[in-house]
Image (cartoon, rainbow, N blue to C red; front, side, top):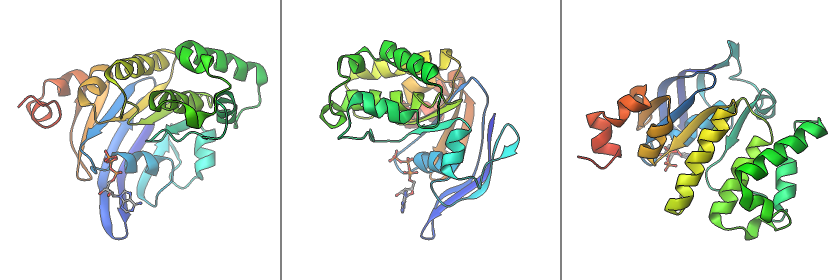
Length: 234
Ligand code: ATP
């Protein structure tokens, strides 16, 4: 279980997160929704210790707040950052192999690669292609695949559906469900609130740096405030 307590982040004196508390239970899909600039990415970056923060983050009771990002990754927490950050000059296969940099068991790594090819047949077709020449959607899939190569306990994804064509959006949410079914805990940041809430066990709504609502995905899908602000159903 990942627990975030009283998380504050500010950039040059401007406050981006003001006392956020969240619990991400094992084997759940938890989603964090909110408008542009609400602080969603900052939350994920704070968990990875990529930004200066105040507050406490614990994993299974152990304080990881001050750990180096690399050590947090080694503890099984992985982030797929927003914006398809793949290594453009490396091939698809090289990107995936690099994803496994914390692991040494070759057989297990190969097994995971095969699992990824099953989830993303498009990547399998393009193993030798330079990642920078993949389409946007394919790069997004590669970014998710690369994070999976770490075999993380907790996979955090920052707007995986951003900029994808509707059919691919459907695919990516189906894939997130499948990754979850394989035993991963998922923390999903999304602007596509409807799709995110539909697959979420639990969800939080962030507005200008503070959580304003939380509940099961099903509860928030029918909540008036969520419907009006995030589902376009005033
Ligand atoms: P989006 O959906 O647009 O990606 P978000 O909810 O993920 O937004 P954040 O990226 O966490 O929001 O940003 C929260 C606030 O902090 C915004 O006002 C943003 O401009 C600001 N911010 C984020 N990173 C920095 C930075 N490195 N320096 C200064 N301000 C920043």
